[in-house]
Structures are given as C-alpha cells and as structure tokens.
Image 1: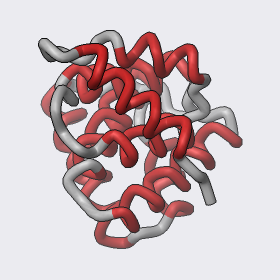
Image 2: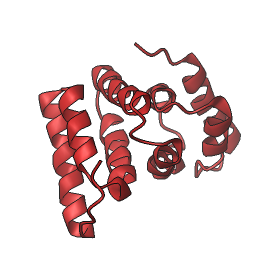
Image 3: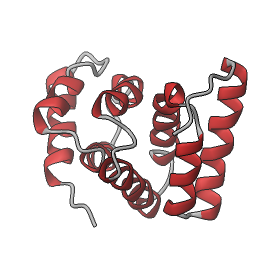
Image 4: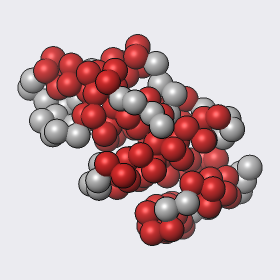
Length: 146
C-alpha cells in the first residue's frame, strides 16, 4: 500500500481522476488497484468523492460503488474510521434529499454497524433531524448487498 505523501492539489487531481475513471471503466478490480496506489492518508478523500459522485448517479452506480467498498473492506484496505471520515461530510448535507436508500447501501457496503450509522445520522444538518436520521437508518436497514 502506498504511503508517499502528495500535495493537496495533487491529491485533489488524483482523486478526481480515479473517480472519473471508475465510473467510465466500471471495473471494481481496476478501481481497487487504483485505490491501493493512492497514499493511505488520502483514502478518506477518495471515499468522500466516490460517495458524492455516486449519489448523483443511478442505482447501477450505487451497486458498483457498493461492490468496490465491499472489496476494500474484505481485503482490509480501508479501515472503518477512514470510511466514517469519508462519509461524514456527505451525511452532514443529507437533510431533505431522497437518497437515503443509496446512502444506506453504501454505508452497509462499507461495513458500518447500525450503531455507527445512527451516530453519523445525528450529524445531518437539518431542522428536522429526527426524520432525516430515521430515513437514513431505514435506508441502511433495508439495504441489500449483492
């Protein structure tokens, strides 16, 4: 696993390039190799960008990203705390959107437990936190992985 440090600007470009390539090539194996080649200190940025981009897309893209996350968990490439760090900024902005099922599936694929999802849900920035948190938790509970 790569640990060489790169500048913030290089990291931003590297992450964007990897995300764009992932959705173009649609290969979990290639994305996995690309992930491993990125410095571990930047993995949370790649998780964050993948989640953001995935939530703009269709169910097939959510399934593809979920498969990648499952593979990263299975191979012990990305620890839970890094997934949490990558998901948190996205979760904070969820408020009243209808993407809880997509987000729930990605959280489940990342290996998070219900307790961790409930804690993340409390970070949603909305006046209707209880409803938003419940929708996210319901999306997580009902998510089925392939």
